[in-house]
Image (cartoon, rainbow, N blue to C red):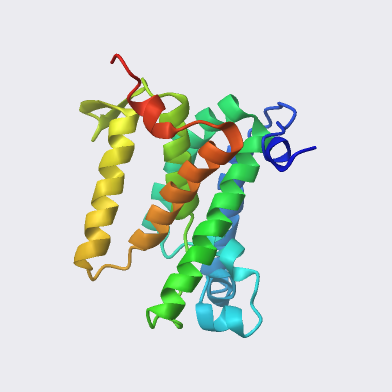
Amino acid sequence: MTRNSLIRRPFRYSFKNLSIWLIAVNVLVFALEYLFPQVGGYLAMTPALVLSGAVWQPLTYMFAHANLTHLLVNMLGLLFFGTAVEKELGSREFIFYYLLIGLLAGVFSFAAYLFSGGAYTPLLGASGAVFAVLLAFATLQPNAQILIWGLIPVRAPVMVIGYTLIELFSQVIGTSSNVAHLTHLAGFAFGWLYFLARFGVNPWRRFFPRGR
């Protein structure tokens, strides 16, 4: 068995609505955060705490959210796009993709925060993994039309590229908001690499096939 074939060995297809279960877990964790505020600090990824032994945080940060709006935006993205991606890939592939990309985005953010002087800056939210789900949706269904603000129809790849440019611009100009733009970009980047390594699919070629 070669390394390449091991990487590309498919999971057996099944559909178990794991997107809905992920949403339920996120809502439950948010309720626990509301009742017990210390839960958020325990789950959020803070580099200094990770170095002190909280090694679970680069994974658990994606299940904690700062406020109700933060939760709703991420869970709506997971509901609308995660379900479609799960149906295409199957539940096992989907959950592996979601958790792996979320973890990789967390590890990348850990290193970025640590070396940029943000050792005590907490990171929380599913956005990195959800942005990877958006990329997967656009790659799997490149002709799908998305209504921006419920009015303007655009192809899914155009939406993904637009979001990427906005995140990149926001990261470069250094906006003072609490949005983790770098984590979002990491979700895009690792999701892109996943499709290349796992499926041998270049998302760009799916976005804009020759002859279009």
